Image: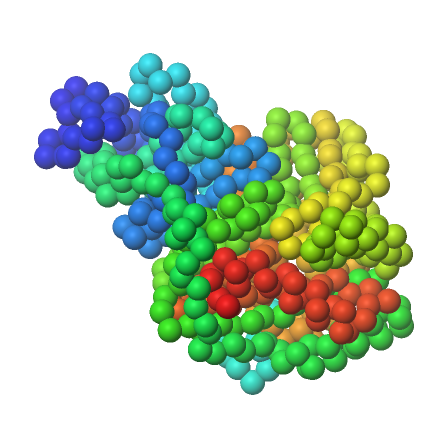
Length: 495
């Protein structure tokens, strides 16, 4: 088969690889013509592992859609650039609608890989992206303002280029090129476009920031705005406590936003590198969509599905870290001994167990919460595992069942979310939503989008929330939000 005429020959691919890619595109084009519907083509090869943040930094400048994923659980990385196909949906059914569209798209995908690479062709392309905290009809704009959410309620997409590394220590990664081919499309032109994208997005010798660079580049904010204002937010905490004591609901998670504006655009690759080094037990993520980028380092995953086992994490209850070992131990003891915090945590774990039980042969929560220690805070954490997952259930089924958990919304779900809709006055967008990926077989992982910021040029919106229960104190809850906001302020270099 002749190589692509007029196409650049990448050293990282070569003529033989481009011939293999063209063969996949031709087979997909024939299938699209025969079935008279779009067909997904996906081709993979092995490449030397590149630093994911450096790769994302270079590649995002070439496309208007990007995702970075650096997993805390298996230390794997994913960089997704460009889009082969978008799956968008709206309203309360946005998650199952996305799942149905993905299953239909991937069912007859045409896949292939470079001979000799030994890559499994069955896993194929990924679907990446995320979902907002709530449907648009269930959110309320900040009082006195009309604000348009920069991210859709559901935005999952098949990346045109994806690079997956199994661990940070592995010397090799998988490069996969994806395209959706419609009836009548020219497969050679599709293959050329993919090769051109790879040529643009895969730099030579990309390297992370140095330690000296990470310590520099701090800036003072020109504007610092709390939404809502501090006293107003504390007043809402008091109102929530009153409703809880009156029996309206058991717990509600009240969030707030801080908008920061500086004199120059934020350095997002540097911010992500700071997060990765400072919070090695968190999942670092970035989603670029048009002019906005949503970044964060979350300690909490919503759900992971591997084989026939599903894992969820109950993370609720927070205390600061101590400046000395002795003070840190004292704060940990206050965290574990607090009846208020244990109740808040138990509400989350109970919901996770009940949500997984109908779908698994056996569900088990860890024996008592452990303490997850991060650089600036410590949390109560309990892993919930379900084994013997029912056949045919993919991770998006579990995202639908679990999101939002009481750690992000409240309990009971309907009553607490209704109260938030009427009282919080905050457009959360993707804050407290969920971000992640799934493969063709339904395996994957999704994280809870906390410890995050929505950034555009020199303006960033940072978010933090607290679980409010009957014994909550407004001043203490406000101070907790300040602690939770600190990681992103430090990552962005804001003094």
